[in-house]
Structures are given as structure tokens and as C-alpha cells.
Image (cartoon, rainbow, N blue to C red):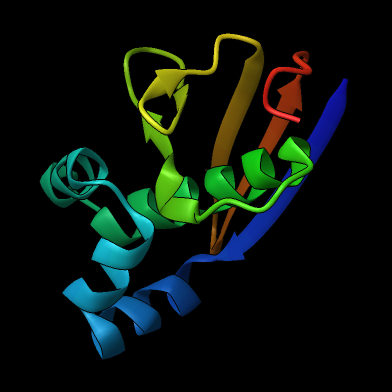
Length: 113
């Protein structure tokens, strides 16, 4: 079992999006994630939460892959997808408060490590 945690400053993500726009978004997020967050009232908070989640998941994998290879899908609780495959043995929690988004991932699988 591996645990990953990450915290992100929401305004900092907003500044990055403002500076780099679609170049940043397309490098880090899947098309589905971008569409989902852009539909949200506070899209920057959504992107920040997903960025923290991707980093937390990445820390549980034990190997180098791109953040874009990790997708965080919504459907009640967050669902982790790695290279198009649902990572059923990775549990993820995302929270936002004030200027911060935080995510914790628990990987019960040796499949991705």
C-alpha cells in the first residue's frame, strides 16, 4: 500500500492558467477534465483540486508517468483513470478550503508500481 498527498494554492493555479492558458491545461489535463472544470462555477478551484489529485496519485505509483496520463473523473466520488484504465485499487479524496485544494490517494495495488 502506498499513500500520496498534495496541497495546491488555488490562486497560484489561477495565475498559471491565466499566464499559459490552454497550453498548460492541455499539457496536464485530459479533454474530459478540461470540459468538466470549465462548466463549473469556479473552474480554477476545480482545476486546482484535480491538479492536487493527480500529484497525490502520482506519488503512489512508484514510477514516472506524465500527469496527463492520470485522469480524475467525477461520478459521486472521484475515479482515477491511468492511461485509459480505471485504477480500481486507488482511493482518492479531494477537498477545498479557502485558498487551498488538497488531495489524498491510497493505492492498494501493486499493478501500477
